[in-house]
Image (tube, rainbow, N blue to C red):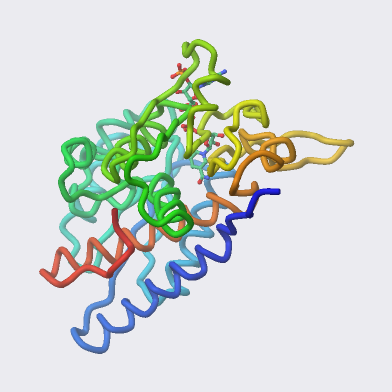
Length: 295
Ligand code: NDP
């Protein structure tokens, strides 16, 4: 049976590291890192995420600035807020909660954020920097996956990595990060032929598909490390349940190590958002970045 990679415990360790760095910044420099989160509209799932982000930001000693805007907020008003946050020296990280209501152009809004404060790493400049192997702000979910892989496997150099999913938020940046760590990387997607055979070549298999339990044990090479990014709400025996993109039982019977859902990648995402904010604060002040919290 596979080793379980405990994302909840790992995220607690990352938060503790962030908190220690925040405390040092305050004591030695009188600086408090600050994260601004912008939520437009009343999507219940987004409200839960934003609440959790605010709570954890405060718990690690950072300043949290929440901006809740009405669903019918105009693009001009949202862009004006982003300009204010870009100019605010107390704000080191800015996150606009996605998805935005349909009348707002997400790309335009994200690209209005100062790239140095782009805590989610979605700004086109950061995408380009990551793609060319330069220092950037790295998207939180793939960064969390990378941290867990490094922690579990040590050097990833030379390993075969397969990422299933090519989204801009998870799949593509995940592939770039694995390439940066010298893996041989394959990106699979909905048009990939014989996906199971492609996946079975992977020493590292990352599933970011958005399809409940699609990746079964048949897709897993014996001993491989499986990272399940998926979060799918399903009904089982009349009860609502969260499952990943990986069929846990069958995959865990073959894999060497696996992340569970819940309690795997999920908790790492917010921990990496906090890590990105402290990194951005250090860079903004010309200070050394915390070790092990960036790619
Ligand atoms: P997207 O829907 O943007 O992308 C899904 C990708 O999976 C696409 O590239 C798609 O291919 C591919 N795909 C879909 N069906 C198949 C198939 N049958 N075979 C092979 N590939 C397929 O999703 P995201 O990347 O945003 O999210 C992926 C999952 O991760 C979701 O479950 C989401 O909830 C979860 N997630 C979890 C986070 C966390 O914090 N843990 C954060 C973000 C996402 P194609 O491009 O060809 O259509």
